[in-house]
Amino acid sequence: MNQFSLEGKIALVTGAAHGIGFAMACALAEAGAKVVFNSSSQHSLDLGLAAYKEQGIDAKGYVCDVTDESAVKSMVADIEATVGVIDILVNNAGIIKRIPMEEMAVEDFRRVVDVDLVAPYICAKAVIPGMIKKRHGKIINICSMMSELGRETVSAYAAAKGGLKMLTRNICSEYGEYNIQCNGIGPGYIATEQTAPLRAIQPDGSRHPFDKFIISKTPAARWGTPDDLKGPTVFLASDASNFVNGHILYVDGGILAYIGKQPK
Ligand code: NAP
Ligand code: GCO
Figure 1 (cartoon, protein in one colour):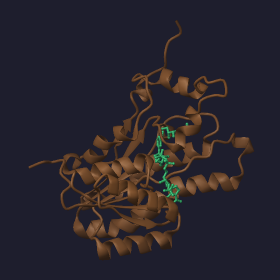
Figure 2 (figure 1 turned 90 degrees about the horizontal axis):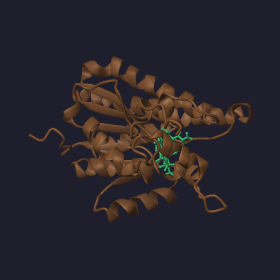
Figure 3 (figure 1 turned 180 degrees about the vertical axis):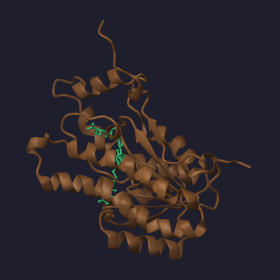
Figure 4 (figure 1 turned 135 degrees about the vertical axis):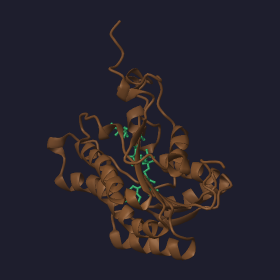
């Protein structure tokens, strides 16, 4: 028996038209799962559907704002009616606003917390009843380096991703007895749209100072790619992790283990 097989499983990956979510959803499909995803707009959904098709994956997509509880409930009800009860939820949709805390509007802070923390709660709440009935479920919350570390300008994001780490442990605590495992993945610095501003080539053609900073802070000496998240996602979605619960798996090229490059 292949403990990593996801044959017959149904996976909902939020915000998976592109970036990390897309790579994780492709990995789940490659392991045998039926993939369902959502986007925040029709335009992004259409691009996502075309991208899955190009990979030979028959994914089902919805336009759904994950912060809207009634929209999430309708999406989950439709998935259950047309595809089946969800076995795997990956809470991936997320945003960041890089603004010094004293300049940030409270509405911006609230929006980040809404998308990055409240929405994973809304989505988990919507799928847990089906998982309880099935006595099987895997919930994977996409956390961050900022679940452990702070840095200038990302107060709301760090607060939300730190909260998401604790929501992960709480879902594990509350629903572990129903054979539901809730774990987190904490990606390091991954080259996607979200981090593009931190890697932008400077007007004089040089690399962004933050880009150099990240390389020096990462023992692997590179940015991660969305594909680096594929194996960890399949592991946490599969029977191979049935006794792994409430854990955050950091996939960071070693950032959290490292004090940084010593001066020469
Ligand atoms: P990305 O390319 O910007 O993708 C973010 C996704 O979230 C998009 O698909 C977007 O939908 C979706 N989304 C945002 N707000 C939404 C809403 N209200 N409703 C529904 N969907 C929404 O970012 P990424 O780098 O792949 O990040 C994915 C996740 O990993 C995020 O949670 C992020 O915080 C986390 N993360 C990223 C890194 C990194 O270095 N890149 C590191 C650690 C953690 P659309 O399809 O409409 O665009
Ligand atoms: C930032 C980055 C991070 C990463 C990631 C780190 O501005 O510091 O965007 O937040 O996206 O979440 O794990």
